[in-house]
Length: 140
Image 1 (cartoon, helix red, strand yellow):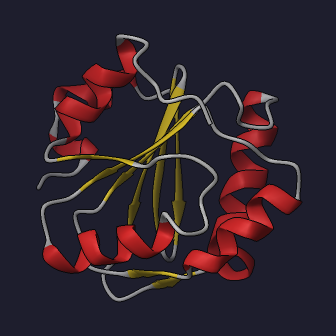
Image 2: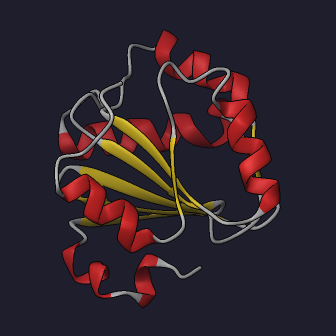
């Protein structure tokens, strides 16, 4: 697994947001997150800030965006916090996870209980981005 910064995709980044807990890369039509090792990713401590910053930069509620979680590190997601995302009137065109670790796949199964639509899993960042660029996003 590699970071966006180590790929030729990095030249397409419109804006990079750097936080103490991870990095967000904003592209045309999608964003990629890379959360740091060991973080317990929650709405109040992490996701809310990302959503507000991305919304401010792009002027969107997310319904036209695909969110790609590039899980290059092992971390936990507070899956029930997806309910807070939707309660705050945010949406996504699609949600993709790039991972091949067993821990991440188990976490993904729990996330699917709280995410409104299907979450698509990819083995590489290139596959997820190519799927997104082809317009194959799963409508949320």
